[in-house]
Image 1: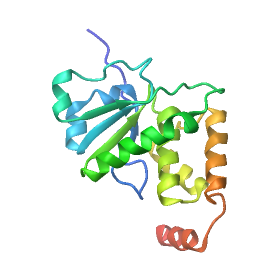
Image 2: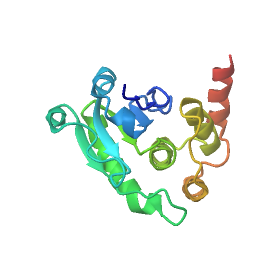
Image 3: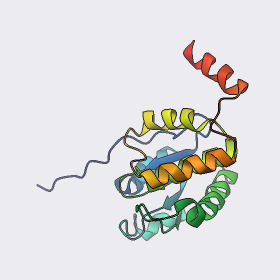
Amino acid sequence: MARQRDPGPSLMPFSDSITRLFVGNGAQAMDVKTLKRLNIGAVLNCAPNVCKDPVKKDHMKFISYATVDAHDDSTFSILSTCLDDATSFVDAAHARGKGVLVHCMAGSNRSATLGMAYILSRDKPNLFDLFEEASMVRPSILQNQSFQLQLCQLAKGLNCLTRRESDNVRNKKKVK
């Protein structure tokens, strides 16, 4: 009997602020039934060198696919290399009313970094609150310290490292 690969955590929206953005792994990208159920109409593969052709071509009429060639490597500048293309793809899918799955091999570093960078650029939340929220959905995210640093640099440039009064009000509402 063939062993089935563990798909990892179930797909859930990556952030409360963007309910149509999902981060996952290669196995989840192949689960067309779940993608359709969640209205995910676009899949961005951040690891095309290790996650080849995620689903059969006949599903391409339902789901649009794109790739960014991100490397889970401490010397790779993921945001300057991939964020613009990822943002354009996510925005186009959202404009069509579709959810987007951003995935890499494990759903931990490349996809999580680009997902968080997208949310930071769009909504400008506090980085640490965003990380806490995202890690509740995907507990093993951002093990790559270089990607952590790049997100911190982006957040600093967007003024997303300090709490704003609106963040404090939002967090108080969550506690109640």
